[in-house]
Length: 161
Image (cartoon, rainbow, N blue to C red; front, side, top):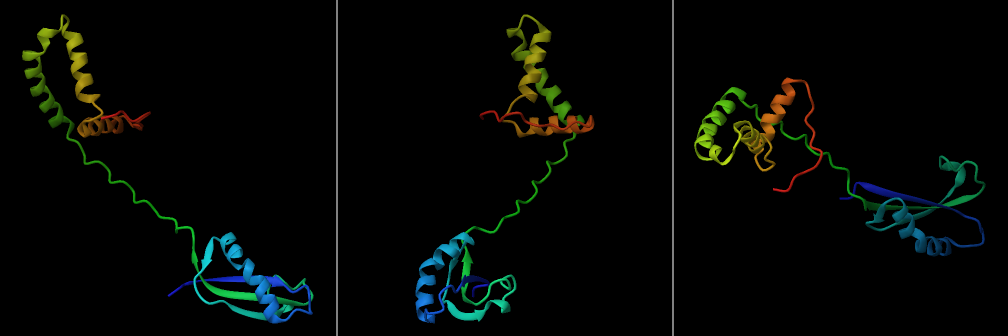
């Protein structure tokens, strides 16, 4: 069942034309009128002649109007409302740091010897842990830290995985 209707109005400028002649001329324009209204005719059209004074907005016109009424369907989809994204689960920063410290001990045993400078090795470790665009956990930790400081964490660009 159609819930939309198209109402199209043409002023009658030639009183000598019959209703059939007027309908024939207006029918050729009906799909264009519907398209302008972002709709399409979806059923039979009812045609009638009325006095302009009887249709609100047309009181200024002397004479008659040809009025077409038809069921219609919108041609543009109804706007959709995107649901709000789920906020990330809260991160237990203390537990996360403890896990990273344990992992760092293993890192020191295996990878630290690759660096001449322990500070440089720690910088690489922090970048690896917090800077990885492929670790959702990294984003959550950074967001939790930013929230603690009242900062908004905004990605300037998306890194490829």
